[in-house]
Length: 114
Length: 116
View (cartoon, rainbow over the protein chains, first blue to last red):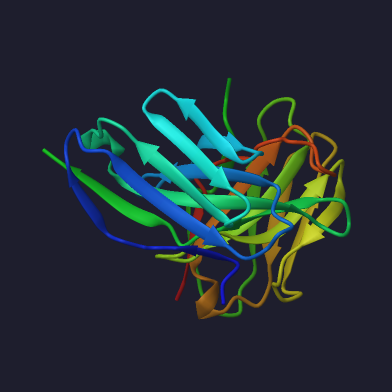
């Protein structure tokens, strides 16, 4: 079983729709939770960064974390064609040497159609 | 401000060769991490360096090595290249790199490595 599970999609929605993207995880050591957006042939771009359970909003994006259920979500309101990309969830754990690493989901490919 | 910069952008090598990839972190960032992203998958952690010391290593063979320089830039070296090493190699930087400090990692656009 993977530490982080994410549906790869593809997910296709009409412009203006609300998009819901989800990840589940199994490692209780994960402390910080992130969502990255990755366009084709580009590196991941940080969208949201959260620590505690609950909601965090930034413009059209809302990140939700439920540590008790080991479940995180990203909601995109009023989706636009420019939101078409792959969305990666990532989780951070502290390493034994004191460093930290990110563990990513597979990524969900989203297409917003006109 | 410039983001994380990586060079080269693309690279084609043959099996058995050696490759060196380079990364310059965001100004003020002291931690650099390397990830491998195979097509259709999420990035996989290879190394983390902070203040020129290795702070973490992922599940990769000893053919992979890295180092960080006094100016916080970093190199990833891969020896004896295999076909399976074909991937996008990503570098990420953050201000701090140790403990529970809540510092997000910011990524460059990567080096696309193709092995023939």
